[in-house]
Image (cartoon, rainbow, N blue to C red; front, side, top):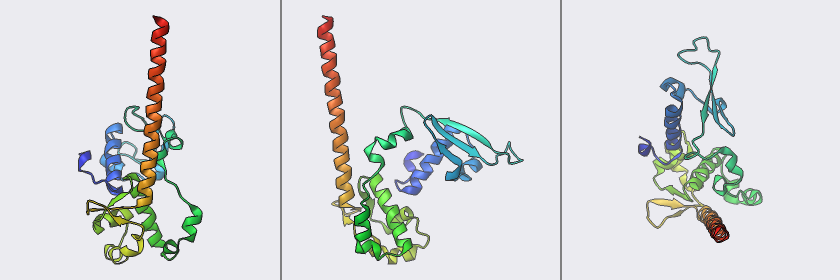
Length: 203
């Protein structure tokens, strides 16, 4: 079921709802009625505030705790240490960029949504305008398609011809991944060295 969901923002939302439903045994009506204000992420997991449910007809509300699975979902506290949780935002470059400054407010909203989804996919997005419109959360598909050129100026066609790529975000992503792999390899090497030393001392 999870594999059937798209890789765009709507697909990620659907995956999150499916997993939350399995983890908490929420009813369908309870899941579709959720919004971000009802979710409280903390060190131990997620607290969901249900405003009304089948067993709470008076609407007093109740809180449901969902613990993290240490083998699956990352703890939100890792956002400050995991470099893939964020990408660099150069404020001066943003404000000085004539392409961005010439956009309308809703075009910048589309653009930011595309950048966020692009980062989660290592700098890549599908080239299909319909999929891009869903990722950008555009309400008017025809308008989005007509103005697509105004917001895709920072993207190039990928080598496969079916995706577009933001070269700077792709380079930043690869640099961060390489740094993480370097740290991981250094940690493994250090652990192996300590284990070897401990074996010698025990002999």
